[in-house]
Length: 166
Picture 1 (cartoon, rainbow, N blue to C red):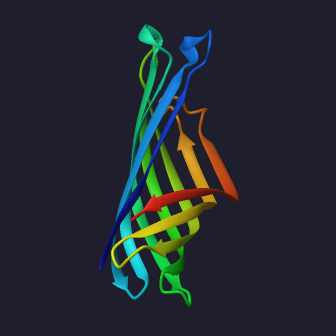
Picture 2: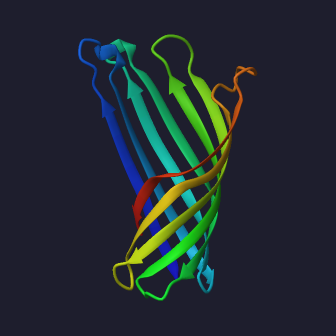
């Protein structure tokens, strides 16, 4: 069996009186997995995104692309339509920032994530999924030409749900 899913998000901010700070962002997160055992899947996830801040000649544009493997294990419940799961994934991403003034900047990041979630199976082929942020460890270099801007972040949270269809 195979699994295909993903997510999508969009955000737009418009500021009255200062259109140079208007912004928009769109991201797409497709994923594909293959069940290698009962309730155990391995797969690949992608991240494609773009953001814009400002207007006209003062527009700052950032594009991003990431990919990485994941493993997921489902824990069945007494209800055939409901299962809990845990997912671990590693994502390598790159960004390109095109500011209105100055040279382009390239960056990269590496993220490890542990995500708990729940899946509600609508039928034999489709499920709605909710995951929480869980544990994330991220190493980031927003400008590879600058050696003094690298960051490392460890975060844990269960306060934000991320819905997906797959």
